[in-house]
Amino acid sequence: MLQVYKFLSEKNPLSSCNYLKVQSSSRVRGHCKKLVKLIKCFARLGIRKFSFSHRVVNEWNSLPEWVVSSTSVHSFKGEFS
Image 1 (tube, helix red, strand yellow):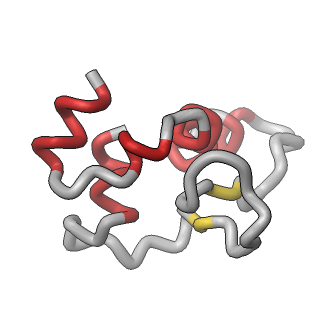
Image 2: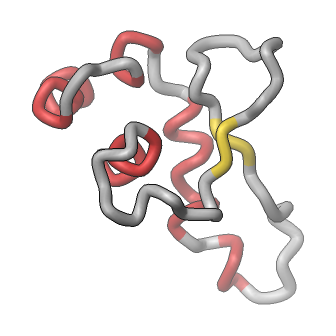
């Protein structure tokens, strides 16, 4: 979860990744940084289904607003654990 936080808050040099996409709709429940699964789970092999970007979406989306909107990596670690 820490790596996802770094990607989305642009605190990582690889923050321009194309495999984590924030939902653009304004009608989301919970926090405003909900992620979208880019490719459905109907992969023939388990390569895409068990990849990092596919596994973290549900867990990230279930986090509360106050954890996702942390101001620093240190505060995110304290809120998440």
